[in-house]
Length: 553
Ligand SMILES: *[C@@H]1O[C@H](CO)[C@@H](O)[C@H](O)[C@H]1NC(C)=O
Ligand SMILES: *[C@@H]1O[C@H](CO)[C@@H](O)[C@H](O)[C@H]1NC(C)=O
Ligand SMILES: *[C@@H]1O[C@H](CO)[C@@H](O)[C@H](O)[C@H]1NC(C)=O
Ligand SMILES: *[C@@H]1O[C@H](CO)[C@@H](O)[C@H](O)[C@H]1NC(C)=O
Ligand SMILES: *[C@@H]1O[C@H](CO)[C@@H](O)[C@H](O)[C@H]1NC(C)=O
Ligand SMILES: *[C@@H]1O[C@H](CO)[C@@H](O)[C@H](O)[C@H]1NC(C)=O
Ligand SMILES: *[C@@H]1O[C@H](CO)[C@@H](O)[C@H](O)[C@H]1NC(C)=O
Ligand SMILES: *[C@@H]1O[C@H](CO)[C@@H](O)[C@H](O)[C@H]1NC(C)=O
Image (cartoon, rainbow, N blue to C red; front, side, top):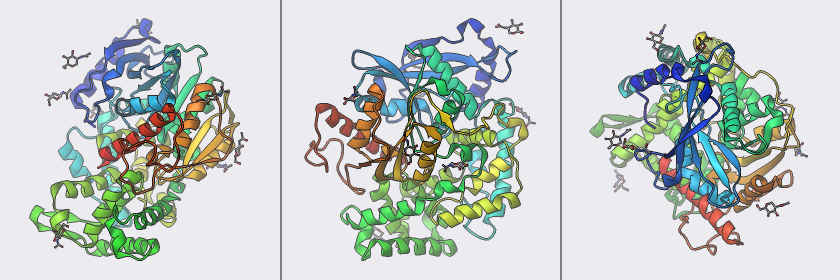
């Protein structure tokens, strides 16, 4: 993700006031997107780009200032064209153009090709009120080097993280004091409905496919505009009330079970998981991983050749982030092996070392996407706290999971957020709502950041909603291919057909596998594939899985 420069930031601020009221509500499609510099977008050739002006500040009805949203469309490939579907890729801070550009072809294959797929860059991302806290990567890196990424790294870590977070909050304020309060989930909900209005679908209803934090946006839309909910699929739920108002330690409740899944999958596939050759069973392997981390805490690995040190925090956050995506597990297992062996030759290879370090950085702090996410999260939270007030929640998080991040960085930054950047509008109601159409809620059984319990909670509070559980591991159902899940999503968006409440879908490949989307269909798969449409959907799911792991690695 590219860092917006201060110059582009000022430019977009200057353009805010320049638009006339008459252009509000109308999308200006410019033609094929110009994404040549973005990575891994070979398939994005058919995406169309445009802009839509929306009110800058929904709370100020006397102002006519507007904001330009960048909006993208992956056009339907088949007639007749049905209602458009809006995507939200979460984060907060994910670039929607990258999401739709990367996966648009696959989403079309899953859905059957009759819908225009729409995404817009949310506030804080891309050209839309870009939110970043550092004007260059050197100052960003320096700011992130003042404390470990995990509060359990030492007795002094939490205090150091608190002090570092004070600096981060201040740095964010210094560069975003004019715009920070204009972000947040409520404005994201209103922006989404502006897009629905501008698309001028037949019924004016929102059709929405959202993952991860996008489900929080979806939940807030459902609460604010229940009568405008069309077909809405929310995959990877983080309890919205907790995200918006609480500290939410429960989100890591299943992380250690995902690590157990890693170990079980590894032992079942020794060819793809070299670690398996050193242990008798999954429990032994799991215990060894925790022992390795404990050893690293007091004995980090020096790599004199490159002046580097591999620490407890580096390895722990590398493993935690890998738990999001089983397709990255074969590589992760190799990495663990080399750390256990303290093999400085391999760990010192720049790509390996950078991987260990950059994972750590993204888990803790400041990539620009991370900063946009912090901007949204902290503006929504709008609550200062002392370190003493935060500690109990950090301790709960630490008790719930040995391998997850304790999120001290995130919580401590928000606790020191400048009040002038609190979101101007915050949804403070509950989520007991009856939506115009029932919502489809999806969750993996074992998800390292949006647990099944949160999905069950939302299913209980959204009247008429139905839960589809995918018996798999990783973050959102997209992290593992399941034709059963894909068919349920397709049927829902095609004509509103919901799966039976509590349906459990199995996945179609083992946790560790060399199967790729190019493999012969369908004989390699655990399930027989029916039609051409189903074959294409399964192929698309495998392709999503591969692209996700390529981006992460
Ligand atoms: C915006 O509002 C101000 C004051 O209400 C008015 O003077 C100005 O003409 C308006 N600008 C546009 C572009 O409508
Ligand atoms: C894409 O970018 C190139 C180089 O900046 C420019 O020449 C071209 O006109 C752009 N195309 C569109 C459709 O914006
Ligand atoms: C795109 O890449 C080219 C060649 O690497 C570079 O010259 C150009 O500045 C880049 N454009 C943008 C918008 O980053
Ligand atoms: C507010 O932001 C501007 C840049 O947008 C900056 O020049 C100024 O110093 C900031 N003010 C404070 C108090 O940080
Ligand atoms: C480190 O791993 C490499 C690659 O597997 C191996 O060739 C080398 O001998 C190992 N070095 C040590 C010191 O074990
Ligand atoms: C759902 O979560 C909210 C917020 O944490 C909580 O107040 C509520 O009791 C939960 N509802 C159910 C049915 O678990
Ligand atoms: C689906 O099952 C959940 C959990 O039992 C329940 O809370 C929810 O109300 C059910 N939804 C429907 C439509 O019956
Ligand atoms: C809904 O669409 C699915 C295909 O996605 C189809 O199998 C099913 O029969 C349709 N149901 C109705 C009631 O039209």
